[in-house]
Image (cartoon, rainbow over all chains, first blue to last red; front, side, top):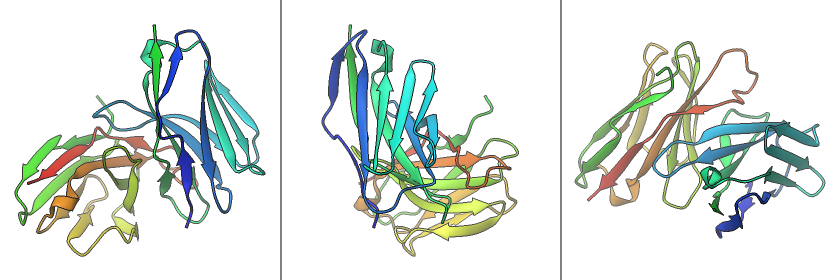
Length: 112
Length: 116
């Protein structure tokens, strides 16, 4: 079965620095790879989607890369702010179905 | 607020009791999903509806779990004879028409269930 790995340890960075989060998966590549933000006690919020034939996608301070050879996606937040502190979830969507398969998430803490 | 809504937000019940959760998707969204999330983990897919038809169910959805979407609008998730292992956050999401795979899913705030 598909396995998605995100660093379970919290990532602590200083305000203004770039945060980089990693998502690795096994087996076959998805049609889409997505990143979500989740705050404590809340549902995930969609951030970015990247297709299997795309290498990079940007949205404001966010950047996602997708390497199907390495089976890896990197999620970058530039000029990080304390308000960016949250858990970030990687999710895969395959052509064969409509369900999202999520990683365990990485908690990001941005210190002022 | 036109987002996905869920009710109740919190539920405490005793083992063996039945519970029912409701999800109201974003208006005009034809796809509706249920996920379950335990502490420190990502959401796990439970089931999916397109309009009123339940098209996919995870093996996580034991026979104690049942979901309905009778008119293709709101959905209910019922858990019968609850067990302590059912304690989790139950998330509902919806996605709009026109997407091939339902790739943009909008999540509700979740219902947190605690089974004592």
